[in-house]
Image (cartoon, rainbow, N blue to C red; front, side):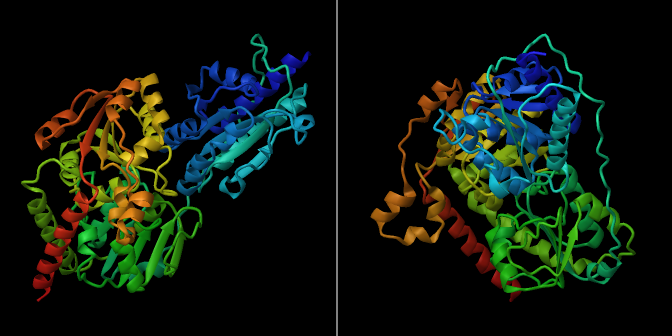
Length: 560
């Protein structure tokens, strides 16, 4: 067997292992050292592949694929700094438990640490941010090494897919010549199957707590199915439930237990529960975290994988369970709902907050605040990807609940603004629905190359661009108290970009509506398109401050 056949059989066995582990999608960034792996993955009819020449964009695109499908997604790149560009997405995948299979091809040992071109230390490149990292042996001929290669592919995907899910790295050194033999067929072993474990716990020690006046707080991105289960749990207990937009609690069937103006409500005086039931990390709503920090109440934390994501260090009971597993365990308890008076106190505050929000926004022209409320009132049977910084906070504060079939996504693992356009494109590529992206101008600018994937694959993405010419989030934060020159230079950071040129470069239809009516009309037009909405950085701050003052005043009168 010649070297070309050896290389091909070895890599085909590895790819078979990936597929047996569950890989059905791959994102390839072309390069020389990765040639044989890229060619064989791209030619495999069982793997849906995408080409993205920008490695940073490619990794976030893969993140979007994994986010939408909850299945492992392979990334393929060449050697050198290409692999380093995956790092931000790897960190996000780790923080949000997404199974990225990072395949970094490499120079062989004889070309390492001697000044060879495009060579750097790629072994365990991502450190503690991956669940596992492994370097394969150089390709060798024979059934033993082919079985080894297959096993490595399968087991690395299995590790990424085990709860809690997360990224893994496989570093693959390859010698020249790098062209595979396209006449060789795979002779991989029979598939190995990993049987999932369904856990159930005896929750009887918690029965007394669950029978008292409580509050459910949900964090992290949740599927619509999980949101439905959590709403049903709140109704079973007769407790209020809160969570930010990514929990999808606000966009499902609708429930009288869900409080969708939590940021206003928790800046007033709220009833004190006897117990807090938390799912995952805290939501984006800062006032909720501040309130919890002041009231150290008995707390049950449910999360997957004993990750101990409790930034307040207040949990009294830690349960390593999924939402489904917890719900199944609760069903064995003889629970009696608490008095309706408990939920009624919270619902009264929700009605007040919603009424004041309606009054505040009604009559305003098109600005960032009114655009948020109009967006959620208009979208239907679509996906929504919401960016970090101002976008997610405005949506959390100002959007009302909507049972119009909208599923919300975001990147809230490490809360960065990198790769957001690419992530949204990846979600849309894997979904069978159109997608709307809500994003600020700096975050949009940070990932312009991600727009190429929207054009290349003709993805139905509508982009709502909240343009305040810079870092509008800092107008809400203490940095705005700095001297004007310092604030302008370091935080306001105006870029003065012409987004019509950006739209033209990436073949996006462009519009800049001037009224709420024209804005809502544009939301329903055929994608892909860029809808730019301008506002001053201080605009949303003034709206929020006035709304907050109105709520706090009327809530005090309510208590009196």
